[in-house]
Length: 321
Image 1 (cartoon, rainbow, N blue to C red):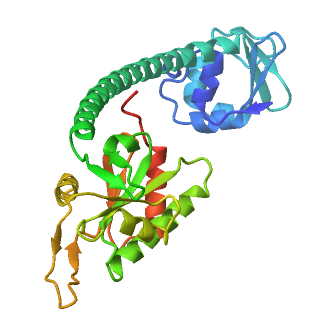
Image 2 (spheres, rainbow, N blue to C red):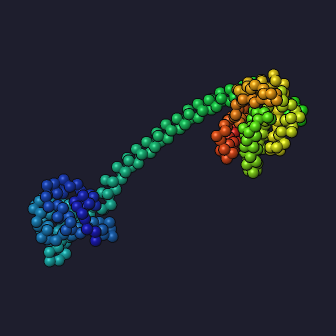
Image 3 (tube, rainbow, N blue to C red):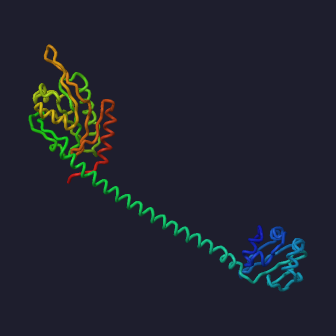
């Protein structure tokens, strides 16, 4: 048996509207809460009420259940009235209780589902259009950037020097390699050795990761008067084995410094003909296309620099085929 919680539940199964059955009865809540609903095997609905509660609703007695409460009586709303006991009666409807519910609830659900589907399709369409326009714009900007970077890579930052073995070197010799570049001089008392040690340690850290390409460290002298090939060969031995020392004529060194915007200035000579060269203290990072990609000042630690280069390597996109 299924106990109802109100008239709406009852009429949903019977298939009749509240206006047609109980238009103005103020005791419907009490009446329906006292009733018992059950579905018969042939899909019909039976409703049982106590006589006392049923009779307390005058509207129900006079308007709907106006026939005598005799077992087997007929009624326009409930097909059969049955006497169940001393104070109980049953009213049975021929109308299948499944019809009313499907008709009253399925249509709104279908309309809601349709609206949701249309809304989702419309939203997906807008999102797809935006993504297409955005991706096309990004592709266009990327192509423009690549063209600009190609021009910079070919036309700027070039140099013509010799390494510590006497071999002529240009920027093109290092295409296809990651390069860490530092400008200094061999007579530097402390800063240059510290920075070259830092570069050597960074290269060693990166070498530990076999998935990363090797980095080529380069040391370019800003003191060509004293740093000839022999002096450079002796100096680079104290650092990483792959460190390459580059030097040249004063004009060649000047052009190389200018290409990378390196400042350097020779100080006054003392009585021993010794002097200090003031210069920019920056480590440059070049990618395999020869592009200046990043720089690191003295405040950056070995770990900071290694992690930065590792990220650049993972995000690298080749410009030249």
